[in-house]
Image (cartoon, rainbow, N blue to C red):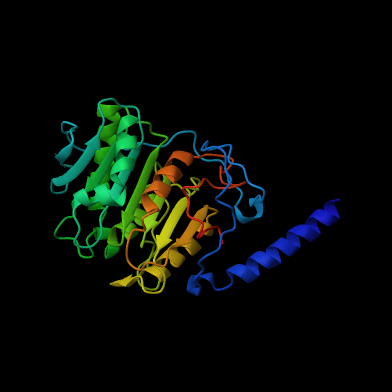
Length: 323
């Protein structure tokens, strides 16, 4: 029996290697390793499918029992809908756009906008219906205005300065203090330059980020910009990564950035769902619903991976699980 198992495993490994060879230069559309139809529930642990994908998902190691929330490095402003100012110690005050509900105890979702964008772009990036669901659950949506001094919109796109993350740290500490948010549901997303920043945050703040969604984001090749250090490599946070095909080029080649990100996080054992929507440099229409479903299904340190045996219908059928 053991010999038969090793034989099957070897064949699967050969098949996977042949499919993923030189993946960082390959485009894949119109196919999926897991079906997205015929699912009878949206429970994070009870998706049904006829084609399990256990061989496509890495084994997960133990993660810390709780996320580590940074202490507040400055005063907490009144939490209200609209713009508020956060003043972390040692850096200039920053304007942050909030969406909150009347109660607390829900998820936190961070948003980083693209080049030349505004914090209010979160209403498009995450979707107004999805934001309404987040706030109805007692959650907080946190979207940032960039510092004009930052080249590439966010400091970490061109330097090692962590000013933007210090603002995020304070905003999170205050959300915990003011709204008693669910610290097992802290998520991050971003588009374009903000997608690179979201990738940086997920890795550099892996001590508290549960999962991440990138639109035309990722990492630059390490020959250009050193890859960021994991704050907690034991937290194998999952990623949902969208890009728009070979034409997704604005300043950076976002197809290559997505693939470089995939190579980096998958080498740590992290799950990554790769989605080439083929529409160029944009957020696809099915992106916000997919992102919100993905966040709901991936709280901190979830195990076993809920998409082992299938994915919910909100995840587009052009997406590949750990291709």
